Length: 376
Ligand code: SF4
Ligand code: SF4
Image 1 (cartoon, protein in one colour):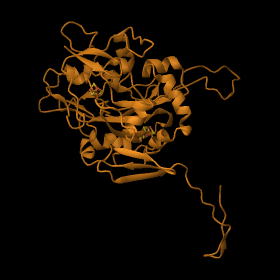
Image 2 (cartoon, rainbow, N blue to C red):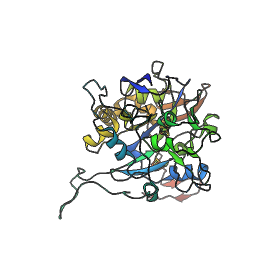
Image 3 (tube, rainbow, N blue to C red):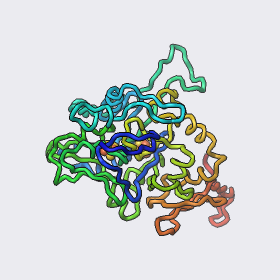
Image 4 (cartoon, protein in one colour):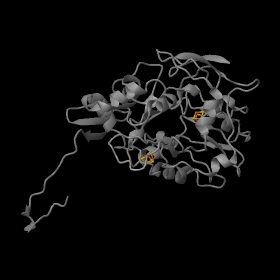
């Protein structure tokens, strides 16, 4: 075991390999407040990558309703149980154990292997709320029942548990962009990665008898375009870009601005210790204890920043870029009336106004010599 520094836990931890940072790290931001669980992302991903034999139950992207939903079922509850105590101190340093530290003798990662039943009912818990309403209750303006939608993909972790557990060294992290891939010619289908990934984002294909996982749409990334799940998102909840956690955050990188400078988006279950690279804006209506467990100690600050974003022009500009271009945005600028995004070469790829313009058509149309009726 080596010692590596986990920036999300703010402490060193054990990991089976030496630290090897990619040149840049693929990173995503998902705003949970905007997801409507339309599953467009799920279908876009499935039809692109996993429509073959043996891939029927493989969902590189899925969207589940919390608190009861999950695919595979109980993926998070079972890992949380393995970790037992998960405390953070007042400085935001994680004091509990990670999946690399609570291991049984001879195991590199503390994991669990889902059964076929865990994959059998992807819709259980969908749209189910937590909380009860008494008879005669009416809407009072405050949510006393709650649920939210959690969109999930592989996190292309900085310390991947799947990679750590693979006895064939078939899993690797690309130096150029940090995407985590399985070399299927090396894989022998031992399913150690399926057991180890705390997010359960590697899948065993029973027909090919090797494992598969999200490939970060790398053919698109190599062309400077964002992945399918990002560009097809109806709710515009997603943005993909890059971070370099060995360098100081750049104020002109929208991902750095959202994640590292304002700390508005948080990792999913950082206590697992893999340093995941999908960051979530937490839902603002959910009980805090649930959110602390899911996103760590930064929840209060993130929600306060989210509520006040309209007064923070630089952050707002970064947010306006969500879902408005298929191109990867490497830098951006907050102009007086527009948020402007640029590609890696510095060419402008998107320009979004702060306020949507409103056009009022005159009642009398001079050109067509007719009256118009603006329907509301
Ligand atoms: S496409 Fe977007 S809004 Fe629809 S379920 Fe996926 S993440 Fe949510
Ligand atoms: S989310 Fe799971 S499959 Fe993806 S890199 Fe992390 S440990 Fe590996």
